[in-house]
Length: 299
Ligand code: BDR
Ligand code: CA
Image 1 (cartoon, rainbow, N blue to C red):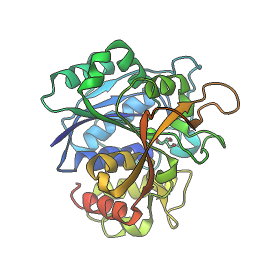
Image 2 (cartoon, rainbow, N blue to C red; image 1 turned 30 degrees about the vertical axis):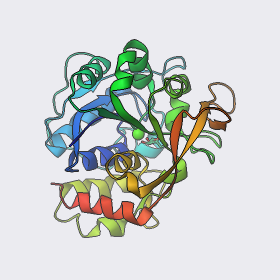
Image 3 (cartoon, rainbow, N blue to C red; image 1 turned 90 degrees about the vertical axis):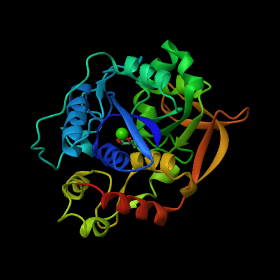
Image 4 (cartoon, rainbow, N blue to C red; image 1 turned 90 degrees about the horizontal axis):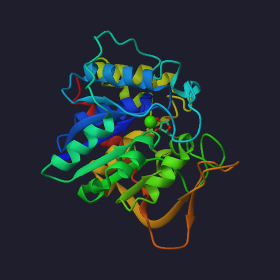
């Protein structure tokens, strides 16, 4: 199966993405590297440890950067969307899982360099850890299968009219990542806003699966959707692309990131040599089937 590393700031839709990745037979989650983002690193790290225990996985959890490269840190960036804890709507009863000693970037490097198969990096938070990994250890870049990141948009933002949250939260790190030469896939709002999961999709599972019950309950707290119309599974789309690229249409593009001013965090298509593949369309019905079929395998 495919070795993957998920770099995450959980986060309600991060929690779904992590759960789905853990229960896909073709994916092997080698590490959850944690970054600041939706809420502070202290909270995203605790949430990652809670998810490790909740899903009963041995996958190591390691702490990364607690602030953007240049902009000042913000404690509750997205509490309006994910709640004050970052995972509002569910009370986790399991004791939080262990956290590794040592920095997430060191763990990422070791796993990528030692893996027999090429690793896929799946960043679903701000790109701070990824930018510094590539800066400190550029030798990892050639050893990656792909970097499938959830972030950006070619059609307007969610945190501002120009910017998607993960890119906006650390635009300098995003700029470095897009300039790194790594094999990037940008899974942006263009598709993720169409990846909707409704209460009806979870209905048959929530009485027999605690994962489905947790998703149902947290999705109701997820501030940018309603459960009847459906909630956008942004981060799960990056996992879905890695597992089932056939569900997506991509186009090669050159994308640059605006770091300052009113358009901070905007991902702009510019002329020139392509630096990433951008998902421009997805099979939303196929995605929904993929999501529920995976849910059926969860505890
Ligand atoms: C992204 O922002 C976060 O709030 C979500 O977890 C997702 O990674 C969507 O813009
Ligand atoms: Ca996220």
